[in-house]
Structures are given as C-alpha cells and as structure tokens.
Length: 133
Ligand SMILES: Nc1nc2c([nH]c(=O)n2[C@H]2C[C@H](O)[C@@H](COP(=O)(O)OP(=O)(O)OP(=O)(O)O)O2)c(=O)[nH]1
Image (cartoon, rainbow, N blue to C red; front, side, top):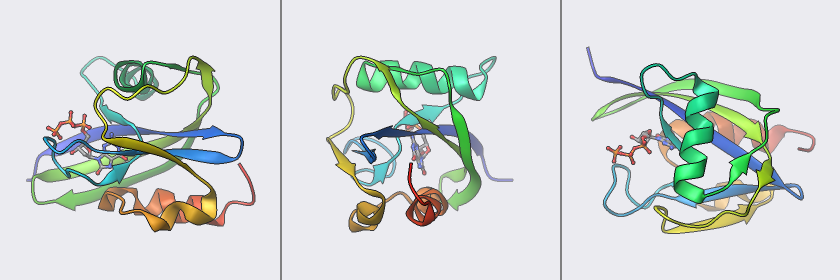
C-alpha cells in the first residue's frame, strides 16, 4: 500500500479573500499553490497541527473557531495525501513568508487562476460555489 500522508490545510479568510501560498522550489509539489499547513505529527490533533504549522510557516496565530471544510484523499506518485481543510481567521499577527515563495489573497472566483496542488481541487471547487465566506 502507498504511504499515507495526513495533512491539514488552512483556508485563511480576510475581508472576503483567501490566502493562497506557493510551495518552495526545494519541496515536493514545488511551485504549486496550496493552503498553508502541513503534516500532522504523532500525538497531535488536526487542529493542533494546523496552529503549529501556521505559526511556523507564516508566523501568525489563527483564531480558535476553526470550521472543518473538506476532507479528501489524492494519490500522488510519492504517496496518498489525506488532506483536511479548515476555514480560519487571523487572531494575531500578519502573514510573514518563511518557507513559501509567494502568497496571494484571492477572491473565491479568482482561485482557479493559479495552479493548485491536485489534492486541493475539491476544496477550491467547493469554495468557488460558496455564497460568501
Ligand atoms: N500544506 C499543504 N500540503 C499540501 C496541500 N495539498 C497537497 O497536496 N499537499 C501535500 C504536499 C506535501 O506532500 C504534503 C504536506 O506536507 P508538508 O507541506 O508538511 O511537506 P513538506 O513541504 O514539509 O515536505 P515534503 O513533502 O517536501 O517532504 O501534502 C495543501 O493544500 N497544503
């Protein structure tokens, strides 16, 4: 069986726009756009993992009222990514790039303008169809 990789991603919403982050060139899926986050470590809940990853990668705190949005699995050649995305807001601080190449704040109907990691497409499609955020 292929390696299972359990990942959480943050849909960070501010003023009706969504934070999109471009993966670094030294990473898997280099240069693709993603919801910031990462792998859940052993002993962590998904929400704990998400808070830790956002603090590590973008140096801000997300608020406590997280809303689970989509859970999907996608098989890449390096393994199966089981991705759960959560809608969240900024509690404290501003996004600061440490690992990503770039970030963009896009409206729901602009999300398809960038090239997303394949596992993210169900989340992108659902966001596109939402009334408002
Ligand atoms: N953080 C995040 N990862 C995603 C998304 N979509 C998607 O396929 N992934 C994949 C990329 C990685 O293979 C894995 C997340 O791991 P990570 O972001 O912690 O990985 P990493 O860069 O530390 O390390 P690596 O995969 O290069 O070894 O899930 C997403 O929206 N956000």
